[in-house]
Length: 139
Figure 1 (cartoon, helix red, strand yellow):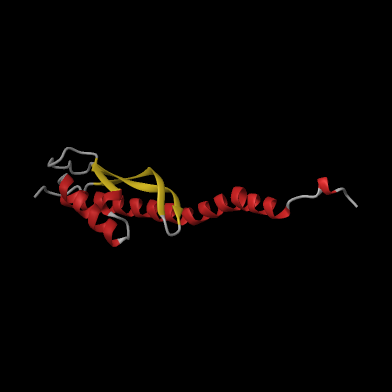
Figure 2 (cartoon, one colour):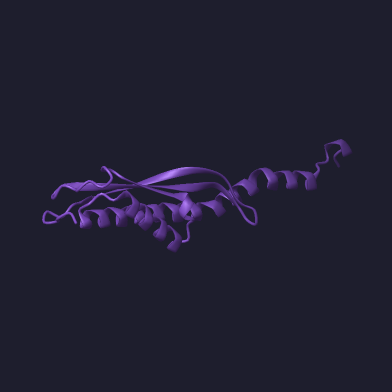
């Protein structure tokens, strides 16, 4: 039999192990789906904004941002968490046969706490380049 001074504190060690090892891993596992969802949302919005601009033949930043906000809301992301930019001068006619690039930046929660919400944030940017129709005419 071991002396009493060598006995462990099982309850204390278990609580410490759960707090230091299991809890952070569980929080990351709960946050990963949100990151994936936001990345897919940014890609979809970038693709659709670039397609709309290429189809219309005009670089309209206000229309692109409006489309981005509407799509974000429909996909379950707050419109304030999404930023839309076009790689052309606002109001300029796009060159037929050229291309247009849309960049969508979305806020990503660092950690998602159940019942509390997001803690911290970082951003992720999706880009999509779409060819402008050779026969498009600016409206």
